[in-house]
View 1 (cartoon, rainbow, N blue to C red):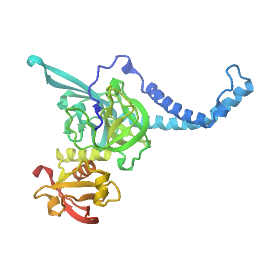
View 2: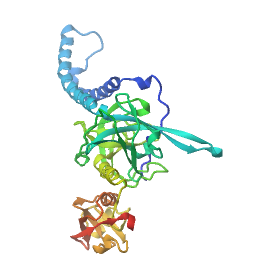
View 3: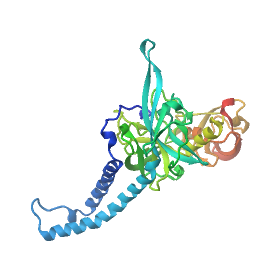
View 4: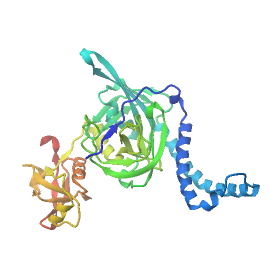
Length: 398
């Protein structure tokens, strides 16, 4: 069964005073959480030095000894905390709070405005500024109905909006003086266990920073919600606290680079339970570039049907050394796959020099390939491996 995930677009109105909490207070809370986790690890290694033998008064000498130990270990923790503070200061000015109003039809034909909120991050692409966010944050809203609240207190509207429902990507063109842009990282280099920060506006609490790690990569079969149109998934999973209002905000590494855009959580309550998901920035920008340059996304087409239940037993029966690749069950007539003599029963092991992990992975790899490009495809058939060249087509024409 696919995990059920909650989108993070709709919010209750933010509490008045809470929204005025300073970023410094929230950052201090996040840093304290980091301090506490490391302190527990240090305590486990130096129990005999840091745990009192009895409850009660201690001598001045013992107190001085404990203070020396604390000073020694605190230096490490303070250095780690300093990294989090610096990253937050670098990224914070580029993070925005997005508010939208979309017209809805109610009972008896009555109309009303649905208010939604989320986050976004400013980037500079070829000399122009854009806000990257999750498409479900601005879904159905006209540019003039979208309010972008900048970190310095200014409020602007986007001049243009592009959306791609199949990846939950939305790009807003903006124009204003003195904008601060965040640098983009390389999500392909991200590994499980890497430290990350999630920056956003949960529950309207602006510029909140939470800290965690990359828990996993390649989450591709999430059931986001009943109305989701997100077909192409390759999410990074994180335990950095993500709540309603964080959607569209950046997930950043310790180099202050954006490596993902937060989009969903796995939760039974609709609140953070330590399982959040972000769109990898490489995948996001592959879509965003087409939206900005062409106004739409052209996706490549291979022309194969795949076996979603391909498992270890079938892989062993076919002669594979383990579970790998995508198992082909049918070929579309007149497709690039047919032209390259790919056949039902084949297992596609590599596509464009990337090892194929499963059927969903191959779907993503094909979709993110430039239409008309010739790519090498490694095939496993009759216990033999060979390579064919495929010129991928335009999905809209099949």
